[in-house]
Length: 255
Image 1 (cartoon, helix red, strand yellow):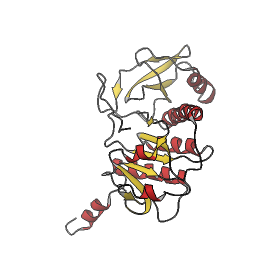
Image 2 (tube, rainbow, N blue to C red):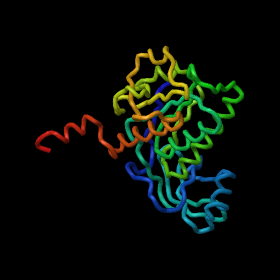
Image 3 (cartoon, rainbow, N blue to C red):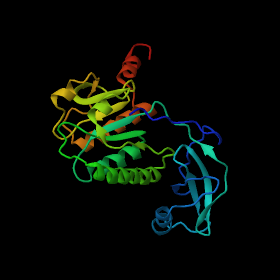
């Protein structure tokens, strides 16, 4: 278990952001010879009502994209390949397994926010346990949820969704910290936040040698805490909020 690498492309125009217009975003395997997946074709035709001649944006999920137009119900590129560099640092959220469809909700919202790395894990007090068969099915479902959410939110980069793992594995990730009400404010010094289960952390997990960060003054539901963790990390990275250290500097005389 490690922070995922995000490689620079071998071609494409660097530093070009994905446009807010230009039609819906859809991911394809090959930007030079794009072919739509059947479910994407159905979504564009039946839900988005895309017709021949309408614009679409083609992405590969690793930062590269190009504009295209539908032609005979398939996309035909009409612009060169461009590239959105991956934001730094990589930010991630690992959350303890929760009941029902809540893992899907967490993955959906974390993807919409722009979190890069998402990992479910089994905590000591997790009520939910996935056997190997269920874990495989859940992994496929979570990847599908993330892909759909990334297209909807126009993300040039698809997040990495890890298979369900253990607390020990996520606690060993470089930059990991523990979500705990008594902690400090989150910062990009520890860009991977671990969120516990409904029953909270057990004694051994609290004894892990990890920094602690507070997400709220109140008690959050487990899935809410995961989403809040992602929102705070992405907001810090994008400069939409400032860290406590930056806030103190700005309040000093002379600013």
